[in-house]
Length: 221
Image (cartoon, rainbow, N blue to C red):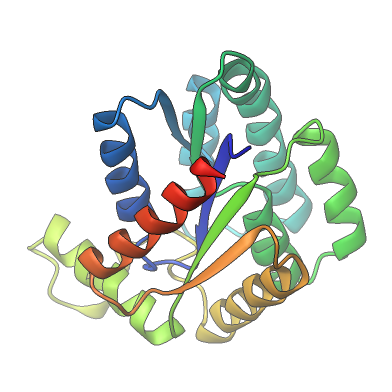
């Protein structure tokens, strides 16, 4: 039975939009859903999110970054996800353990086996039943994030001003994002029963229709 769905993808892939749309659809059908995200699903998580994404130009050591994300996940699972699953709710999560493997493992080069052990501790062994990977070329996703930052800050005109509206991951070099994308794809190929890879270059409506169809099939099954 499908009880936990995660949405994964690189920056600008549109996963947050698709999660919101499927939540609205399922809620209208009478399905009780918990919609949440990592980092930032809990009060503590919101503070961690601000630290890890908006630390500015200061370098963050990879163990610091990793343990902040794991701390967020441990609190998130204990405070929100486990209780929701126990109550029979359908959990929809914007990023979960696969983002840690893709970003810190493939992107930063942290040992993958160690990451998976730490993920298992932080998540208490909870794994999504279904994961949508919204995949698109890195250039497409980063272009979307820059357009989004300009809309939220229309005064930004120069490249430096534009970058100020991006979080520290969105400001990473292109080769980092390429490694993350390939990491997500490798994870998905290794777990074909759990993952559905979607072309995030499609329109919002097309993606929503595809996700809706798959969710309906899995829920009915």
